[in-house]
Image 1 (cartoon, rainbow over the protein chains, first blue to last red):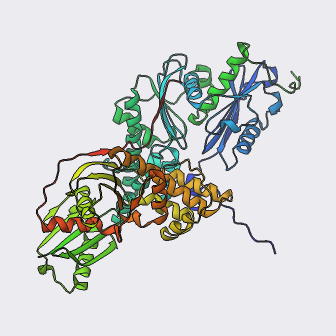
Image 2: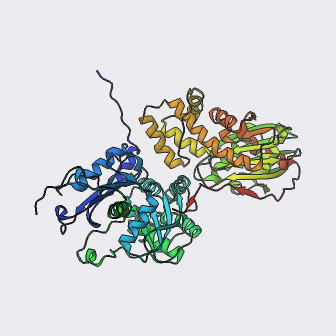
Image 3: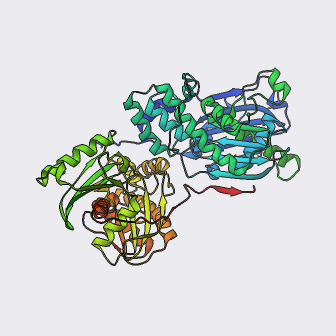
Length: 325
Length: 276
């Protein structure tokens, strides 16, 4: 009788329920990819989530966002296949693909890699417009503050990728402890009578003990949620203050979806963030989905487009698109 | 004169009763959430063990991160001062003290008289603390006692990238998943903390003799990693977790003048800066 092998995933079992944000994909109904000239892709493999963005002549065509598994190359492949699902395209139709993110060295379909700092700045410029000068990306396991110019070129940056405070993981650990789904945390943090003092530890591990103490004292869950969001926002503000903020200021990445943290960052800095709407009026008019998590991959796909247009690289397309008009 | 030293830490409280320089009794217990109550309970327990009553104790001095919770203490002294007094009594040749507890790691440069000359701390970050060991032991599905023994059985040094206890936990789980032997993972865990404590220690300078105390000093696996990290001999007195309480008791015996030395805090985690 073969021994039953117990496979442990990267996350403890109990956490699985509360971190699980919805995975998404989308195809632009207004673009016929087969009529386009250049098809580029950006693949952003983070330690927590993987995003693929496909662009046709520099316009957003398709994207997918899913959890990164324990095998990064496989995650990249899965995310790519899902992004292309239903489009009639395959990875062989792509002219140039750039990998970015923590797992960028392992993206099997990428022709080259570019740092996520550069990709986030470029992506933010496309999504929010040329007025953006400071970008805060709160990723799954890191947190970066970037200063850029009107073309989305990086001027300087600061990154913390050694500490869970102010990262998606820091929030997931908390969500699991308090047993509230990650996507509910934001709005519940505002359901308090009075803004409570922040958790005194920014360290996620020590904050956890503090939270356990508050739970035992019988403090209401929403108060604790508000206190934790404040502590995470505070941690991130330290990074931003060190870098120096120039308006306009935009937040990207998964945790930008957590209003509980985003609003408290605004409050502590006394600076408002750019509203989460497309800079491109056509995209706004046509109501294209606005997802802050795909911004890094957008930047990567745009770099691919630029490199091809300027003749810096040659198309890597392996197969012509079926020519049906 | 009978005195008491009480050390209330992040995880454990220790009580030590002393008469004319001889330890009469000592005891420890977890503080739990309600620290003040745990302190009162342990104090009475240790008194009973020594056949004494509260009224027999002439002076009580407290220390530790929650020293203020000892309502009946005459005085609260800083941890660094208590550590220095305790260590110099046990090991007169000591000049550098490394104390790693559940929430904080500190390195203290001491004078031959047991005065604090300089000290540096790693605070507000679980990396390099006993909490880090606890978290990793859980991830390895073992106890803190076992993880110490495991790491001494290691045959291979493997790198551990994570310093953060949260990221470290997933890294440990991935290492298990990759079929890395548990002893090697345990050793990697201890090397990671030793690296961080080493950074703290180097701020004050490593003058012989180097003595390690505090709860984590009981972890032989960690001490071994730290010896290798510092490339120096480290002395660990017996019952190292009681040295803080001992120092507090010594302070209760003789009036002690505290030095005004301020802690030097190590940066929480490295922030990468760049230009593109």
